[in-house]
Length: 239
Image (cartoon, rainbow, N blue to C red; front, side, top):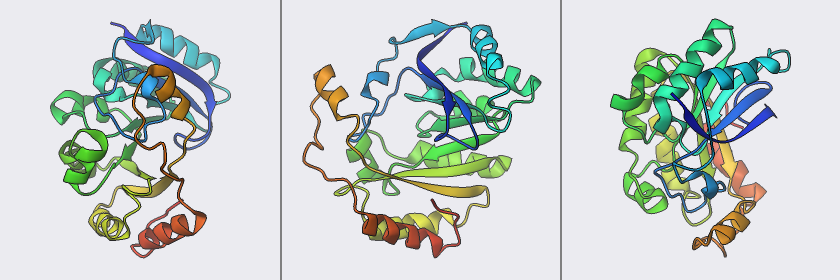
């Protein structure tokens, strides 16, 4: 078995608690208008590794990640659920904390067994309204909501991630609906708000893709504070 990996970051601090060994998997079925890694979309890109090769490399950094762990990101890591599962099993054997950064778009019939082995899920809810979600990403949010329900059933630790994009997700009424909806789930320990940025814009150009958000501004500090206050009202730990 091999997995297609786009790249590896050995001392990441943005994708889970502590210092992380972050594995960016290749391939994603979504086409988010604000994606900053469109170079991970193609499934057959990147470089192939076996699970043992990845774990051998992880162990080289064990002293650095002892208070952090390993995170799978992408792309959509659960598109390669079997490969991820094999690495997770070995990380568990070595007592290494693991996380998966996912949009939840992959059906549970494919990835439930993999979720059972991970310690933390960073679940990126693109939009609480499935119709807007489809406009924004090309897919509705039904699989994402089912995944959240499954994680609640399994009592798996979840951080919700949400990108604030003016004109799309910077919708205070929809954010209020989202906060109220999420308040019914006991497994959510943190909300991470990710302000839209344009650092990946050059990738769209270099790949020859049409970047629709060329004239979209980044959200203001005042807007982010307002969005944080919406989630704080529902007693969430929000950053």
